[in-house]
Image 1 (cartoon, rainbow, N blue to C red):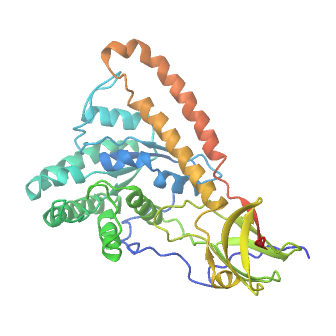
Image 2 (image 1 turned 180 degrees about the vertical axis):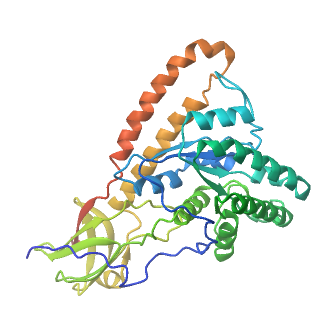
Image 3 (image 1 turned 90 degrees about the horizontal axis):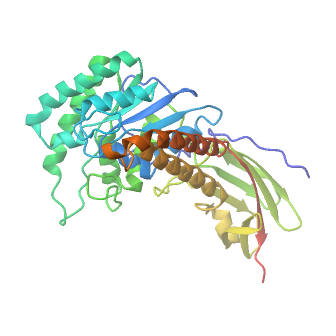
Length: 400
């Protein structure tokens, strides 16, 4: 019989795949989701710079605007502060704070996400007044650009055990800097996203999970957690892990997060789905799809996609529900994120070239135009990966 898609119903079951620590303090003065035409800059120190190695945030934001032209540029610089202290001079660039301002203006942003405070926090309480004053100066200089500005708190200093210093004192000082940034946001009517509290809550909820490489610098799980938090705080609707419950006869009993249809065939059971959003898999393991098939005859069954096995289990396993952490939907999200990472590396070489030395300046101007063309090409490729896709699976008995 013909299949008719059953629309997802988020009200059927509260399957929002809530992560430990995601009941974080909300953003102050949230301006809501980004616009399709926004040009976003990430500005900050090593925490911001190293996001380019993982790009969970950029990938999660881009897929929310599959029909738009959203652009993100990462201007993070390891070791930097609100004073632009780490930014060296180079081709047509001054150094320090002047370079920071020049490059922000050069990329003509409509939104700036600013992540400072970790490096400055090592000055302790005695450095707090200077940090607040100089952060205010940075905001004064950025104000005339008329951009939407979102202030990010520094992250939590994760306790990693005896091989690392006890971070308690540093976390006490970090909290002072978090509150100082919150106060700046309140005073100026800017948005504020508290990353510190959420990472601390996540660590308390899962003490054996590691979110950083050294207590301070986030690893892939840490950046995945932060990306989810920023996406949520910017006002995007909660994303539900998709879930389907159907019978071996093709009756769909429940659908969450996708559109789905099922049909009994000579081979077994055909299940067609249409995603509403590209899924970005990460190591947090909280939003993998779940497929339940009831009424299968006793035996072993495999879920196939384009003739390849995706998951395998007994009839009892399928009746309980199989977690589909791998497979084509995860691969589509991984391709998108890898495309963003590759584009980000080209952009990184565009604005922080290896040969940024005076004796090379005669050759560099032409390089920039080549980089710009390559970035444009890669962004076209990324946009082609943003649209949600349809998939056809089959649940069939394994061969004897």
